[in-house]
Length: 296
Image (cartoon, rainbow, N blue to C red):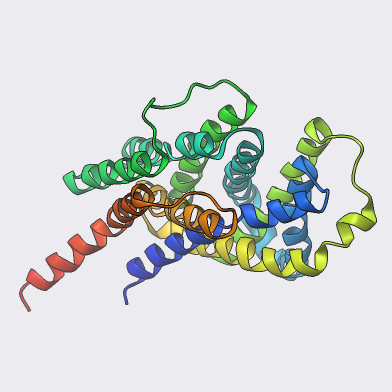
């Protein structure tokens, strides 16, 4: 298996596990830890778990300097903003606005990196958005920016596009260091959100600590593995392709919501998943076909 294929699988996996991130948020809400307080735990616990590893790699962190911190901030901000969007607006609206990111990524990669926009890439984008439209039933078109959550989702998609271009531009950093700084910056960014928007009164410390027995292992599976996979795979791929592969989040989110939240799942959702899966694999299928046609 080539490095390129491994990177595509890693990014697709990251999208899949992020499609499950609503589950721990729903569990915290059921325990009385709501809104931004839930986000503080969602990002603070992984940061605490990763802290010993970060401290052990203090030399690369110092050597990475400003650029490493900029990449950590740039990759953390869109994920935190998307989490805010899911809490503050309808999930459908958040997905629609966030997953404009492949369009931003394609344009930015062309402007900044000089990447050529091929016919296959245009077809990939078309299939991805057709799948998104089919799944989410967007008969009215794109939603208007009518609340804080809508703006957070739009800015999250744009920010994710910028971060993938930066990761592609600065490929010299070790995935472990990108991972540590992403997790640390995610927790740091959650702090002012709590101060500005968290509902009062705050949940008790005992209530929050009482959730750690299930939250910590869940976040290791959902957050830490997904973040590491994206920090390893994203710098190796075209930013536009990263945005498309990340749409596997929609697949995981729709299936998990049908299984555990009783949300509908029928022919429309299945057709949308098929189109998104085809879009995510189209360029790999093209490369495989060209490889087989190449003379030995």
